[in-house]
Length: 283
Image (cartoon, rainbow, N blue to C red; front, side, top):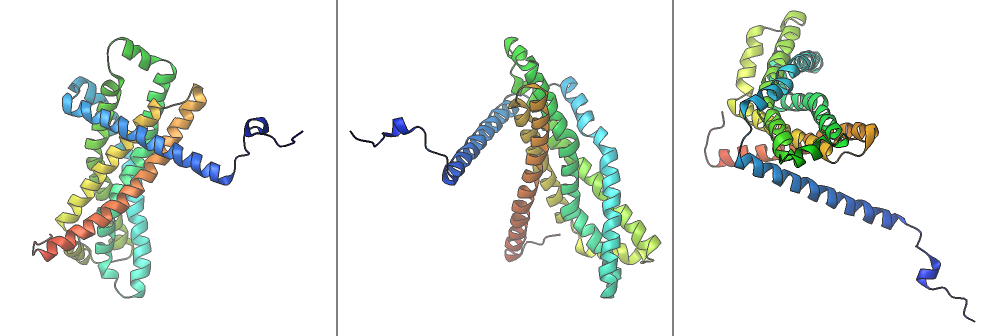
């Protein structure tokens, strides 16, 4: 009598590390595919028909106006901290009169868009995911479908437009307040000449830098809205599922912001080099 067992008789194989990697990779591709499909559906509604003003204005107010205080406070402190750190380093090199170019260049090119996006992801992105997730759990989204309304057109498109269009204004506010904070500490605390502060800022910060910062912020706003709405629609059951969706919305938005920032920074540098090779002035 043979003692060997067939595969079916032996039962399922014990999962190994390779199985775990394979399962995670498959889950990742499924999640990316689902997000791309969701985004494609959103763009279809954006092209077909825009929401009415009475639907848009309350969401614009919630996303834009109510985010101004938190953006102002964070921008002010970031500008002041930049001034403290920059002066400490530049004074050792006797370059403290260049502090305006460091503060303003950093805020306009990098910190302003990223700072406003992180604040938007934390305050608005999580809220959108929790709101849509709650509607899904309480079957309000099913009710919309039963009434003949498409949930993506009714819930996602207005929130996407609000994040996409309001974040440039929030970015400009964050940059302006941050520059004021940096100027105040540099000139009123450390005694740097105001003339040198603005003169070196003008030399090293161009209009091109401001435009690229605004373009960056719009891409961040689009990513935050898509990720937050997608997490809300894919929310699990119960209060735990809603809480997890809000947390995932912030974490995934933050990762998307950093990844987009890297890609756009490399693209901008390459674009500037190309324009300079073609003899086009970048100002």
